Length: 78
Image (tube, rainbow, N blue to C red; front, side):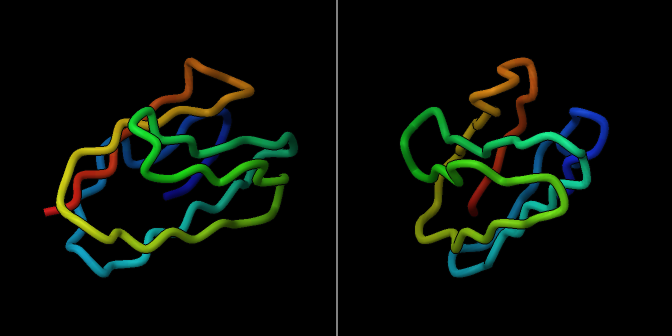
């Protein structure tokens, strides 16, 4: 996942259980990747930094940035 210009790309990412998802923040401001269902929370990802999460089980995980709630995307684990 790439965070660029206050947008997370791609909007939907499909992965398998056990896959590692990496968010790379290319913006100059901090962002988060916070799942609405509590599956993950990156806390703060500073500009130029990244964060990793291992998808443990199947499910759909919509998430957003706590600092910029209009930034939304979904991880689908199948």
